[in-house]
Amino acid sequence: MSWTKGEIIRDVFTEMGIASYEFDVSPEEVVGAIRRLDTMMGEWEIRGLRLSYPQPSSPDGSSSDDDANVPAYALEAIITNLAIRLAPSYGKGISPDTKTTAKTSLSMLFGLSAKPVEQQKNSMPSGAGYKGTGQWTSEPNDPLIVGDDSELDLEGALNVSSN
Image 1 (cartoon, rainbow, N blue to C red):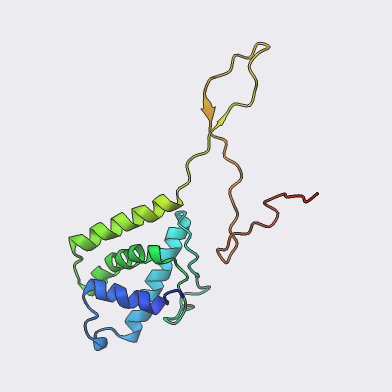
Image 2: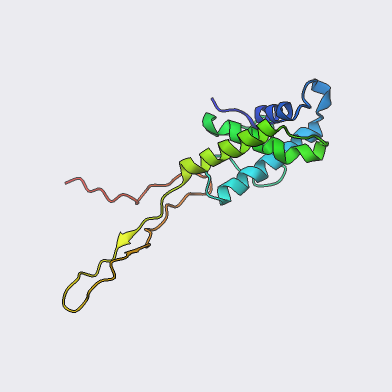
């Protein structure tokens, strides 16, 4: 089962050192933190890191009971990076360990999602006067299309005939 957005926010406040007592965090602060979580995850998606996080259709479209739908290996990066983003709003400093963990875990996530640049040999055959350039060209194939729900749609991508 996936973590809820509220559970992630609770751990973010713990990382910042302000969730020691239940009354320290107001419901308005939780809503604001969920908005910041939504915007951070949207930014990561634009940068190419797709984690199946459900983006709301309006700023108030998320609640703390919504599933985050992110894999467990991404939680450390989400919690520590959101803590770094929220800490100045609460007048809190972030420990160097948290900053290091945030940077390392986010780099690992981007490393997992990185695709090498596809390079292809020039398709023009040598001979008949064409000497060739001897260079590789970057001509990537069409990128995969992801639907509005961040689910990969492979329908029609594979032309498999069963004869």
